[in-house]
Amino acid sequence: MARKILFATAAALCVLAGQAYADGSVTQTWEQVTAQDAGGGWQDTDKYVLTFSWVGDATTGAVPDTQSAVNINGYVVLVTTDPGSPAPTDNYDITLVDVSGCDIMGGALSDRDSTASEQAVPQIQSGVYGGRYVAGRLTLKISGQSAAGARGTVRVYIER
Image: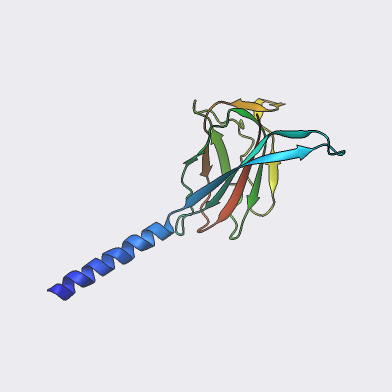
């Protein structure tokens, strides 16, 4: 009887460990970027980069929605995307959603390439691009990505 319980417990732990490993994940970093003029005079310290590094689920490729750990409270001026290896599904989509539920990029991160790094400026309205003010946190959402274990990086450049 004790062997059956021990075996059942070990089997359950293996299943749970496999499920934890299989889930997609997102990590993030927040870094201040310091720029200096060519002569070394002034320093511009109001620039930041929020980096989301994601890994798709080992079975479905799904990536969990992830809220930024920091309040942005500034202008998002540029976003870059870098596919990793294994490559994500071609033409997958990314949205960066503010606290109001609005995609701050206005769809500019749709149809990401599976092999090339790309960049986009926020689309304020149809045909109008520029810095987009964000008060609060952003949530990264990735859809249309089904490549098992795929990886990628999203960098959000911010001016405060």
